[in-house]
Every structure is written in C-alpha cells, then in structure tokens.
Image (cartoon, rainbow, N blue to C red; front, side, top):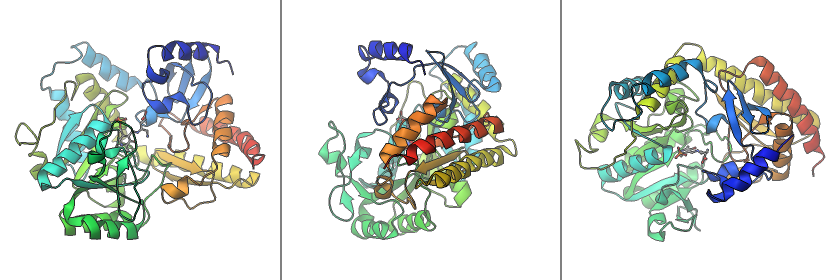
Length: 431
Ligand code: KE4
C-alpha cells in the first residue's frame, strides 16, 4: 500500500497541528502506522492522498449512515449554501429538524441545537444541575461523553468511586463531583445510589456503550437506572450521540423502551456537518435561556447548512425498511467475522444492533470496561493493519465501533469477510 503522500502530509501537518490531527484518535496512536490523509469519499468508499481506496467502516465516527456524498444530502446543502452559510438568527430549517427530532425520539418534547456532542452533554448536565439544584453526577467507566471537564475522570479507589482527573487541566474539584460505577453492574448502581443518591443531579449513560468497544446493556441495567433515578429525584440522561438514529430511528430509548429525562444527540443528526442537540420534556427544556435562567449559547448552533444536511439524512432514514436493511448488514458482518474467527481458532466475540456492530479479540462476554481491556490488543492491531492493507478502513482503536451505512452493498460486505479470513489467519499466529 502506497503511503508516501500521507507520510509527507503528516510531517507537514505536525508542524502546525498538535499531533498533525484535529482529534487525537485519528493519529493511529493505538495501532501504529501512518493515518491515511483522505482526499475524497463517495458511498461506502474513502480515497486517500496516495490513491488508495478503502471500504469505510468509520463513517466519520458515525455520521455517514447514508454513505459519503449522498446525492440528496449534497443537494440539500447546495440549496442552503446558495442562500448564505450562517446568519446567527432563527430560520425555518431549524424548526423542521427540531420537529423531526421531537416526532422521532420518545423523550424529546423540545430540543436545543448545538454544534458537537460535547456541547450537547455539557449542556444537558448543566440543565440537570440547574433543574435539581444538585451538583454531583454519576457516569460509567468506559463511557465517553465528550471532553467537558467533569467528564474526563478516571475511577478513583473504592466502591462508588469519586472521580479523579483523567487529563491534566481538569480541576480535581470538578472531577470529584463525578461518581463513577461499572457499566452493566446492578450492584455498583445500587451502591452508588445508596451512597450518593440524594446528591445526584443526574446519571449520564450511553444506552449502548460505543467507546469501550460496542457493549450492549444487560437486561435490567437501564431499567434499574430509571427506577433509581426516580426514587432519588435525579435525572436520567441518555447520551445517544452514537445510538441516536443509528440503532433505530428513535434511538436506543425507542428500541429498549426505557425513557430518559434528557437525551443527547449528534453524529447522524448533522448528516456529516457539525450539528448535535440535547432535548427532553418541556418543563425541563423551558428552563433554558432565554425563557429560563439556565444559560447555554452557540454562534453556529442551528447552522442552516447543518440543518439542511441533517434533515435530508433523517428524511431518508425515516423511510420504512431503513433500519431493517442496516440491521441485516451489521448482522451479516458480525456473524461472518465470528465464523471466520472460530474457523481460525481465534477467541472473538461480537455484538450488532441496527447500523452498528463491534468485536473484541476476547472469548466473551464483554459487559464492561474491565472485560473490554482484557481483549487481545496485539491481535486487534494485526487485524486492523491486515484489513487496512487489503482496502478496509476500521476504527484505529479497539475501543470504538464498526459503522455500516445504507451504501454498503452485499458485494462490499462479502469482500470484507473474505479479507477478514486472511486477517484472522494472521491473528491466529499471534499468541
Ligand atoms: P463530539 O464532541 O466528538 O461531537 O461528541 C462527543 C461524544 C459524545 N458522546 C458519545 C457517546 C460519543 O461517542 C462522542 C464522540 N465519539 C468519538 C468516538 N467514539 C468521536 C471521535 C473523536 O473523538 O474524534
């Protein structure tokens, strides 16, 4: 695989951009090698500066559920951009997307647009703290909710652990307000609520975890959060930045029948342009400025091009059969990868829901971050590079997801599995 141009671009990029990238995971730090600098993308393929083409399973980390350069999305953006690109004033486009979200997502009666998932979760937590008058929050180890200070915490010692900063620059005072518990651990949830319940403003959770690899909730986990939040007077926040419009049109809450108080959305919602949102019941959302006292703002919030791209994306996803098609594709991949790992004698486990799947080089089950960390990293790295060399672009980290799109056809999926057979044979040689 030619990489000269990407290597040259990385050297140049590093002179003006930290690590040469605008988001750390893109630097290939955990897998090694040079990240391909992408020149263009279309459908399920991306093309790099050296002319290599890859079938793409990153999809810009989730947004590209229709595939890249989808004609209807491009037409919508083109119509919008000919009228200007940003006004910093209300537009009818924002209402259309807001009404679509409210119609689709069970918990959302009102929604505020922002420009990133980080802004969405940060704002939802401020609303929860403002609405309850409480400061402490509970999150789960291995869940990522963006890089707001209070969410960059590691579990401290002890049972229901008080957070300690996971990054320099995060004040210990902020981290201490974040309690951490083990994902899918009903006992840990009870201990956290028994110890901190009346102090908790909110619990924030990825209803399907997508940042420790793809880890579904065990039966009863989300329901226990709902019950305990109700008893403690805390708000339940679903971070559906990944799962929103990805696992189902109404997100994980529609699929699983557990309704949070607030929902954070992003990625698919913007159709590839910067848009995210947080929403919930009217009596909560009306506490946000300007009607209420809780402040949040954004220059590019509701940007007309992002609204147009998002609305065009949701219009296509709303068509019947979209999620059945996405589910067939993700199951075909997950089952095919499992079969090839089994045939190669490589311990492996997979999970797939709607348009997302994940895998671990681990015999399974993987229910939390500790178990995810037991997966075989050397085999992941070998698998990743073998697939990349064969023309298949997976997330350069064992703790991410595999995203399929409506543009991935059977031929591409079959080709992916044929390449996986070669990659698994290489993994089998690693002890
Ligand atoms: P952004 O601020 O990156 O738009 O969203 C933060 C965020 C919030 N919630 C969840 C569940 C998320 O997965 C994310 C961001 N996801 C990462 C990768 N899983 C984005 C990729 C990156 O960091 O470059």
